[in-house]
Length: 137
Length: 481
Image (cartoon, rainbow over all chains, first blue to last red):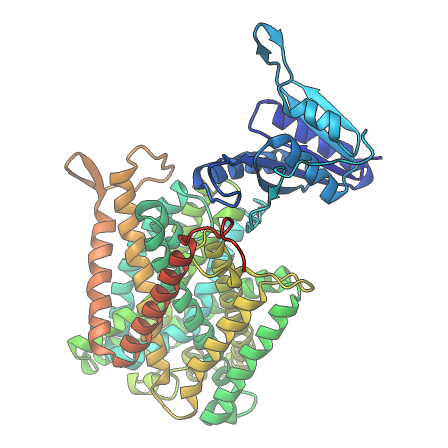
C-alpha cells in the first residue's frame, strides 16, 4: 500500500518507534523508506552554509535511525536537508521523491498550558501531497 | 490533501552533497578476522623472506626476530586502538581521533602508499613461482614484469566491473596455505634442519650494521596483516574483544611460522643462493632442496600453484583495501571526493581503483631494466607502513593523554606514570624504534626517499588545496553575470 515512505526525524524519543513502524509498513510491499533530518539555517546565513555542528547532529540522528532499521532487518536511505523552515522542507522532499506516505513522530508538548502540535506538523498536514500518519509517543 | 502545493519564495531547500556512509554489517567473528589477517601475512611470507635475505644475508633470522618483537608491540598498540575506536580506517582513524584531521590524513596517505606497493610486490612475485610451469616466468625479467603488469591490469578491470569476490576461495586458500606452510616447516625441520650449519651460515654471512637495520626495516613487510585486521573492525561482531584476540592469535602464528621458515631456509640453501636465485620465490627454494623425492614431486607444483593463488588474492586484497581506505578517507573529507565516486552502473569506486592500479603498474615498470627493483619496492613499502605505525603508536599515547577516560576494553599493561597520565611502555618503545628505523631507511635508500617523500608531499599539496577550497566563501549571494 505504501511503497515510498518519508520519515522526518528530529532526535526525539518518537524517532525510533516511527522508523520501526515505517520499516514494518514498507516491508510488506518491499517499499522504500527515507529518513530525513532537516537542518534549519538562519536567514543571516546563506542556505548552503556548512554548519558542521548542526550537520554532525543531523548525521547522528540519522545514524540512530539507521541502527533502528538495522534491528528491524531493513535497509533505509537517509538524507540531510538544509532549509529555512522544517515544514516546507518536508513537503518539498515529499513532492520531489513522490512519496506515498509521510510518517511523523511527535512528542507530547504543551505550550501556555495547552497541548500543542507546534508549527511543523500543521504545515505538513495542510500542504502534504500524500497521506500523513502521526505517531504520538 | 491540497491539489497543488504553492511554496513561498523563501521555502527553498538545499540538499548538501553528502557521502553516504556504508553501514557494514557486523558479521565476522574471531576466526574470520584471523583468517583474513593471516591470508595477508601468509602471502607476505612468500616474498618477505627473500627480500630480507637480499640485504640482511646471514642475519635474516635475526632481522626477522627483531622485527618480530617490534611486530608484537605494534600489534598490541593496534589491539588497544581498535578496542577503543572500533571503526574502519586503522591507524588513520586512531590518528584522526588523537591529533585531528591532518594527522589522520598523513597516516591514511602513508598507508595508501604501502597498499600500492603491496599490490606491486605481490604481483611482482607471482611470475617466479609460476616459473615451475614455464621457465621464462622466472628467468626473463621482461616476461616476468610484463606478466605482473598484466595481472594488476586484469585485477583492475575485474574490480571496476565488480565481480563478486568468492569468500569460499579466500578462506579455502588461507586454510590450505597454513597447512602447507606448517607441513613445510615440519618436513624441513625433520629432513634439513641442522643447527650448527645454520649457526655457521649466520656467522659467515653476517651483514654490515647498516644492512642489518635495513633488513629489520624490510622485515616489517610482514606487518600488513595488522592493518587489515584493524580495518575490518567495523564488520566484526564485538570488535572491542574479538579484534585484540585475533591479533594475539596472529602474533603467535606469524612468529612461529616465520621463525620456522627462516631457519629451515637457511638450513636448506646457502645464503647467497637465497638472496639471488630464490629471492623472489624463497618458499619454492625450500621445496626444491627437500631431499625426499616423493615429497618434492608433490610439494613443488603445489607450492607453485598455491603461492600463485595466494599472491593473486593478496594483490587483489591490496586493491580492495586501498579503495576501501580511500572511500573511508573520502567520507571524512580527507581525500578528494572523486576517490569516493561510485560508478553508476557497476557500483564500484572506479576512480580510486583505476588511479591506484595505474600507480602500482608504474612502480612495476623499472622491473624491465633494473635488477634491484625488488628491494627498492620493499624499502618504499617500509617508508609508508612505518610512518603509519609511527602515527598509530603516537596516537595511542596521545589518546591516553587527551582522553584518559575513553573506554578501552583492551588496555595495554606495563604503563609508566608521567604527569598523571598512564603511558604504555610498549607503545613508547615501538614509537622510538619505528622512528629510528624510518630515519635510517630515509638516509640509506635514495629511491624510496625521493619517491616516498614525493608521495607524501603530493598528498599534503592535495590536502592543502582541498582545505583551501572548503573554506572559500559561499557564492549564494553573489550576483551572477
